[in-house]
Length: 388
Image (cartoon, rainbow, N blue to C red; front, side, top):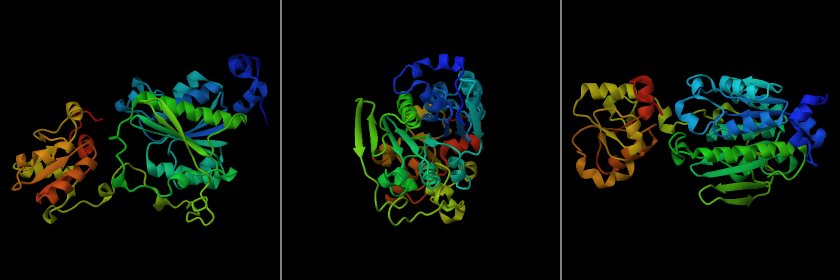
């Protein structure tokens, strides 16, 4: 049933209503719509704020994470007063204050293989505000099976992407562009690549606009194109693509016919970080932070090498250690002894693992990676260090 607008709502949304291709009927469409936002971080923040302000009747919010200090550089939905509290509760407070008339449906478990299709089916469309490939592919696949459109967005350093996937209407899906999920070792770790904060506002606002156009039935959604954004040059380009008949999801002979839990991994770890711990007597290529602490305590000759960048070491460091940034390792091999155990760490363990593999190729057979890096060290060994 379509809900009418009262006089206060007409006044509130007057700048929409005065638009000739929106009007009162268009605002009614917005007020009666249901949109699911997955992820309330850098992209989900501006998306949620603009859709709440636009008067979207029901916003579904799927998020399981907590607010951390390094989020605030770009996740404008959250405030310093909500540090270490659930992002979902932070979002609920801010969005309710912005527009108390809208309905907020909170999904504290986020989106999972077990609930993805059913969850997305409850809404008119879903917006991807996530920052990792496994969840991105899950949302794409579940939206296809739920027969719902997906507004896609991503950011990386100074570059962004936006698209509108609606394969049930003849357009491509995300897998038409990128059929297979990249391997863990082929992509930067979630927290190590970096992103300029203001770019999240650009991409998130564009995602909001795609959703609003779809609900209103006006303009053209980016159904057969992906918008590529270079914020350093302010160049916007469009990559055009039709639905791929060979797509493993929406093609003529699909390989993916249902959501299977084994296809989606919900963390930003490398494949090496999910292996069982190695025994110290097997000359392991990597060990946990707990084993690393035991090694350092029991063998004072072990050399701890920090391969992070200068600015990261200024935030926190494990002492005593020597600092050789990853790119500088080849030119500093003469400073590293082959006769002692080398324990190498970075932020999360990806860069340091690459360094360990390089060192072993050069004959440093005692080089070992600290799995999980200083991030896990701050969580499990020394909580006095600043986590970033």
